[in-house]
Structures are given as structure tokens and as C-alpha cells.
Image (cartoon, rainbow, N blue to C red; front, side):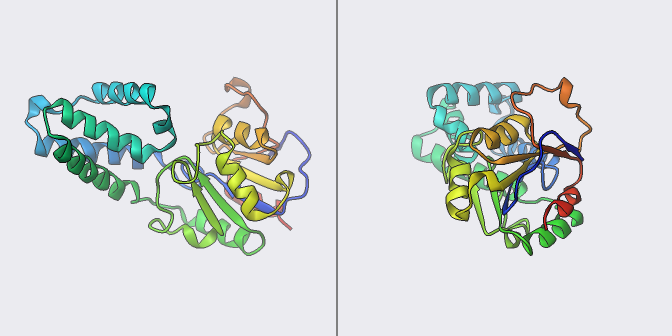
Length: 238
């Protein structure tokens, strides 16, 4: 545990979900692979989009409609729909297939191995303070077993612009009815989580379980505290 500032009173906690409460990288890799496997089943080999072209298409779409960046499900749906239309499919057929593809990806997206330690720590914390989740991703907390620990969970797209924008932080502050400076936000990302939280008045805890070195990172704002294990939060909460 490393302190960069003296912590103030903590009356509530907000949590990022992906890569803070579980390792999200293998989940996304598996979900992406499932999508490409599905495309290979329904399309001739020559028509299956390459991974590079898939990324290029997504960037072209967000350049036209920047709001897609704030809703990863809508972004994937639109990319799939446009891909099918570029292959000559009718709009209705492209929309139906895009929804099928998104639904398939979400099945894998919500197959998450949440560590027992995460469950233990969240159970102990939620018995003492209100917890609110704020995520830029599209995981379903009910399906992965995390919902019971949280009083509320806000998701980018559905509930507003993605972190580090103010929307999700403001939703949490209004819901908790606690001054922002008495909320500690916990997250792994130095920009979306740490900078976002500090920019909007919350205290910020950087969850660094990858042995990253702060002095070598691209930092726009220091966290108040850095931890490498979620259990380090427990002695902070009285």
C-alpha cells in the first residue's frame, strides 16, 4: 500500500468492475474469438472480416458517431450490422444477424471467473459501507455474481458517458447522497478511474496488481492511494 495524499473520511466506495474485481482480458479474448468463429460458420471464408479490418471498421464508425465509444454493446452491434451490409445483406437481415452476434458475444462476456477473494472482500466492505459500481463495460453483474454486494451499478451507455466523463461519477454521488470528497473510488485505470475520480471530486484508489511503476506510466493525476490487493481496503474502513 502506498499513500500519495492523506485520505479523508470515507463514507462510501465506488468500484470499477473490469480488471479491478476480476481479470477481464481473457474474457474479452474469448468473446472476440467466439464472434469470429460464428462469422466463419455463417459466411464463406472469403467474406469473413479480418481482425485488422474489424478494428478499422470500428474506428471508422466511432469517427462518424463518437457516442458509440460510450456504449460498447451498441458499438459492436453497429459494426456487425455495417459489416453485413457491406457484404450486400438487406438492412433487416443485417440487423437480425448483428443482434445474434452481439447476443453470442454477451454470453461469453458474462462467463467470468470472479476470484473468491473478491467475493470475500466485497462482502466485508458492503457490510460496513454502501458500494456502487461504475463501469465502462457491458458485463452483467447479476450473471457473474457481483450484484448482491452493490447498492447500485451504473454502466456507460445505458446511464451516461463513459469514465472519465462526469456522468457515472455524478450518478453515484447523487445516489449515495454523500459529498464527493467522502467517496473513495477504486479502479485499475490511471486515466478513466484515477483521473476521472479526482477530476470530479472523489478520492481515488489505484488498484495496481500488475506491478506497474507509477513513474513510468502516463500519469495526468496522482491517486490518493495505491493498493495491489483488494484486501488492503479493509483496514481503511472503520
